Image 1 (cartoon, rainbow, N blue to C red):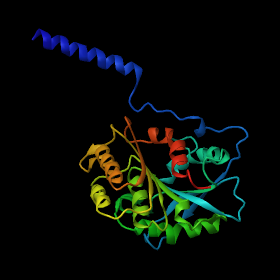
Image 2: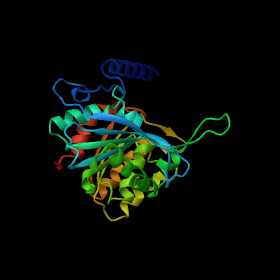
Image 3: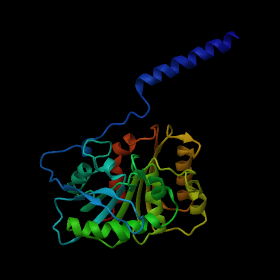
Image 4: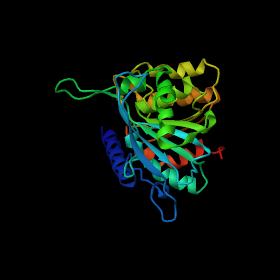
Length: 292
């Protein structure tokens, strides 16, 4: 009994001491996520999409980032972000327009138009609130959301923002957080002719709408021409839908087994954008490393 007591006390002391050196989810943004003098700033403009042929009855906000270096005539690379209001926020966890400004200026990524789109909502009924269509759009394993981007959104982006988007899928990326992360993967998985670069932050590869099946599907499907960056943390969600860390670990194992061009960064964060935002610059540099 005495030995057990001493051993227990030792464990407590070690744990508490380690806590002073590092706190879980203690991630900080770096210099590429901050404004700098001398770096040309792109424009970010908000638009409204009030109709959809793919998701009838929904409407949504979206934003378009146009780099300062874009001449309005040349085709540009494209990157689409789900939950766009979060990603485009210049004081949020990701600050994508700021990062784009810095990386494009440093020639670490190509001139790229950013499209930030929110999930659709249905109008309120009576005195109720608008109903979100987010889970249906993001968690469904089909090509429907990719078709929404192809048919409803991207033609509007080109017309309203006066940009020419490259049709080369190797010059198109798609990103998202949580259910937006699995949505990004699904869009590229279903339509590699539209998108071939995927960035997933704490992706919901769990059984919300069957997403936990992806690791097995990946292992039994001929490899597709995709480049995939996954980020997750050991303190991510664990609930009735499944374990987010386990889902991402299984995804990474399946991608490795099938010899995909992928990278998986696993930290100690929770279900948020702190870690993903902190490593966003290096994530983008890795994804766009061979595109000029």
